Amino acid sequence: MRQRVLSLLVENTAGVLSRVAGLFSRRGYNIDSLTVGETRDPKYSRMTVALRGDDQIITQIRAQLLKLEDVVSVDELVDDQSVCRELVLVKLAADKQQKQDIIAIADVFRAKIVDVGVASIMVELTGNTNKINAFLTLLDDYVIKQIVRTGLTGLTRGNYDVADE
Image (cartoon, rainbow, N blue to C red; front, side, top):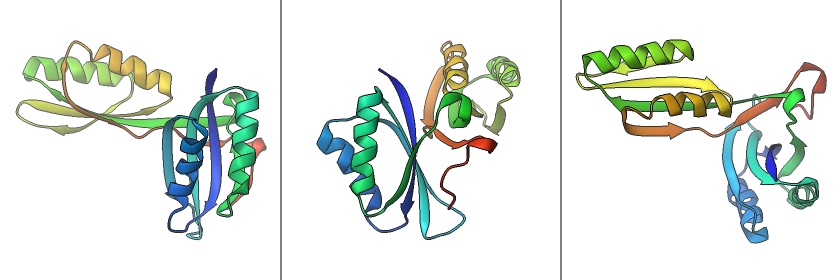
């Protein structure tokens, strides 16, 4: 089973996140990542759900989601027809020399240094999951004090427009 990404347009109402997540939970499907944000129309939110499943599972999940009254549309974000990104913030313990080394790694990945302390440095990187994972692998030699990842979010490319909000 490979990772799949669903884009849901939902009504921006209290409890919609709980109802969508509950549907996955009741059916025994694990959510790899879930991001939610209001659209340009505050009546709607866009949810991006990353999960693992085959075509049959995705078809079943889509059908169940569309039965929820708050769900307006469900679309799969296919690799060649969409752009998916993730954000990671990493706070590392670092002395002066380590900071220079971390900055060099960050430059290769076009990451941003967003905070520098006496004994730490914080780096921000946006990209696809493979880029984020490769970046984090290079930081394995350093002491990571804190890390946070947003999870995937995405949109279809220009000619593959789905329901507009």
